[in-house]
Image 1 (cartoon, rainbow, N blue to C red):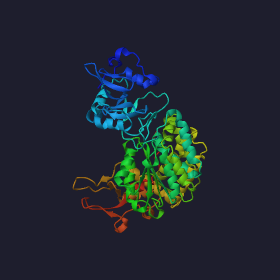
Image 2: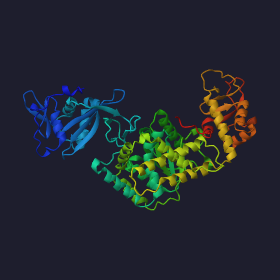
Image 3: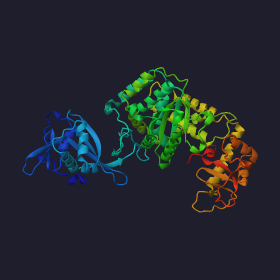
Image 4: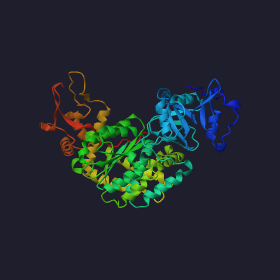
Length: 576
């Protein structure tokens, strides 16, 4: 590894005199290449040459230089940012693992040649030259997309482009695998190109579908600021509106075809896309009821990302059928995090073909510009602003019949608040002129969800269920339930109850206390749990479940799926 001390750099070519570059005299990169030329090489203005001991020079390749080297936070994963000039005189950039320069020179150089780089010698000669070039900048290498660290001043787009705020002095290289190939636009023309893209997608009506797609595309950038969970948004009943939202959302970051997947794809492919979408978007099209078995795996993938750190993902799904039909709600034990059906049957989608075509034109330009604008606006310090957007949505819940806000309702309000916040950030940056204010749309969508999901119970029943669920959560937090999943051949009797990964098993005494915490009798609570399919039994006396033989005395208990009941618990306050 070359020493990064500039005083130890190899001497420049012949006395360090400026090279006569002719028509390229105004190209600072060529002059930099000349000034940083390692010992044993020279540059004649067109080609890099290897100087032999006899003094003769042998051409090996076109102009190229190592701009920066970087390593991961653990000190491994070293990589190099290589600038190279193609035969048409254009400069290009690529990031290459340094280990590949040593072990796979043919693969590295063939990639450059495919982009117009001129090769005169062997690939090994090119890689030896790049390894010999001194560098004086050592940066940070990251292998995943999304926010870099917790300062919210650097973001890696799905294309691998690293966006930093104006004046941010961070050398960051993305050494992972890009998810999309975004359009290459010079910085000076990016604002004009993004404005043209937006004008194309919004000029044809379909305001609801366009706004939802836009907000869903930018919500993953916003979610980590407040630490809100990942979610899946499913538009159903209007394939044309779904296509508008899909293509607009995908077009923010890259060609829609590269971002979009199908529910018909193999589960491994879908789960890999979710895992790779750090602070990013996954688009799934063509949902049908026969793919319902894939939902739990998708939910688990979102939950795993949320549990692993601050990265988040938003999944935008479309299809004719809803994911959670009212008559057959998804079983609560699958814990779908936030899976929200949106009925789009009444949405205007007459211009679907024109909007989809406009979204694909200049795709991948809008997202990076929006991220840079948000960083300069100090998005990471705008937690209060985003919280107000959630409160805007929650204002839908008014009146004496509302009752306490349960965990599920709180979580859904955060989803629509994040969508509202994403749209509001773009509005404030003046990136989406002509966009209707997003408050009304997301409050209405939240109100629709509340009417479908909270309106099926009376306020009194919802209050009882919420209090009982909160009491059960406190029992779990106090760790007083005896585990059933143990290597011991015998599980002791418990006056309180038992638990495993799927359910809690409460004794009659505990169930009575839970009912009392809700202000009711045990019989009324049992009836309510049965009506909500939250109490599992074996057709035994008293609606109880007989425990396994290894439990001393094999008693009966009330079996309640833990994930299903906890969705009704009172929402936890935000941490300070």
